Amino acid sequence: MRQIGSRTVRRDRAFLRKVISGVSATALSASLVVVLAPGLSTSASAATGGGWRTNTTSYCKSGATPITFWGWVPGIYRTVDLFNETHPSICVDYVTKVGGSGEYIPLLNALKAHSGAPDVAEIEFDVLPEFETLHYTVDLAQYGANKYKNDFVKWAWDEVSEAGHVWAMPMDGGAMGLLYNSVALKQYGITSPPTTWAEYAADAVKVHKANPKVYFGDFAAGDGQWVLALMQQAGAWPFVWNGGAGVTINFTGPKQMAFANFWQNLVNEGAIDHANDPFTSSSPFFEGLNTGLYLTWPTSAWGPSYFASYVTSKSAGQWVQGPLPGSATSSGNWGGSTYPVFSESAHPAQAATFAEWLTASQASWNISVTAPSLLFPTFKQALSTPSLLKMTIPMLKGGSSLFAAPAKTAPLIPTISWPPFMTYYLNSTTAWAAKFFAGKETIPQYFRFLQNTMVKYAKSQGFVVHT
Image 1 (tube, one colour):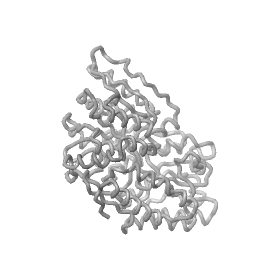
Image 2: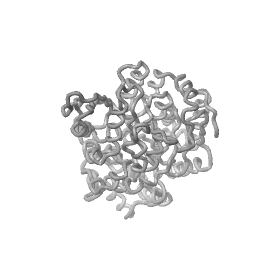
Image 3: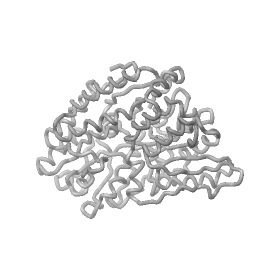
Image 4: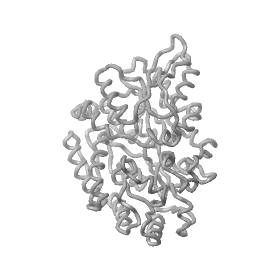
């Protein structure tokens, strides 16, 4: 999410290597333990139970250039098989990893040791800058990647590129929508979902007044990526980083505090719960959705697939994935992955050919959008295919599409910039969340805490901080 043309490309790499290497690959590996976009690593497998496999070389030809690929998307071996079948001069061996830290730790260790690293691997958008600053990713522009620039939604391409350089190929995303229980809403006189956040707030208050035991939703303060996705839509993004020594951190500006106060007011009204973070192991959030405790969930395109494994006959067939309130003009993104080629690759040109085909060919996407993968495209052509727009899963209301609403708003997601210390931010949000869930602190207090914590950390790492 860098601003093309404004980011310092190589001039400050030495500084950044010092800064991030000061954290060391080992320490960075430890911090990456918490980095996991849940919908990308677990949603499809939870929904479909699709099997994984490692050996994808059955179509390889004798003498083909060997490429190793690490990832965790269920069913992605199917695309690797097709690539090997249609590219006889290259042989890609897919190695399944556990999502997030299960891949990042051995990957960082291998890159640091200059031994055992794959040629290509799955890296989430928000984590990519941390690999870039260690100079572990190859500039794919030299292998023709820039010709695909206009084939992707703008925000996705901006997150992997800068001033003509391409540090990874974008793959899937998590354009936001509003998952809602259509039957439950009608019980409270709401015949259509809210189209603005003002309507969302009014509906939330209406429902809770009618039934104090029911909440319109839940503010998942402990999931820093979810909070940022909503801030992105609201124009309240707190970070600016263009690749150099300077970084902007602003959680307490007017737009940021307006966002915090909006949600806190709903918590104060009792209209929104503040008890659960969906992706903690003990969270009853999904059971709450299924049983009617929560009626809506602002979530990504992959959210319904993750929730699907929790749905029983109590709510099966009642759910609709509609547009996020306010998304007529802007939306947010939660999750998504990229595919860089690494500096240790002995065959970067062939690896680039694979990464580009995997992410920027309709043949690849024809497979990737289907179960068990169920990836949501950032590739424009795939976003408009009838098969994608008609796709559904059993938990949804009959005839309701899984991806149509997010696909419509995906091009409206604004470009933002990730800082090169997202793992520290995510650790900080997790550590603070228990206080909010216990009702001991508010969202505005949370934002002030993040401002102080992130500024202090960034300065300790040698960054020049602007607020």
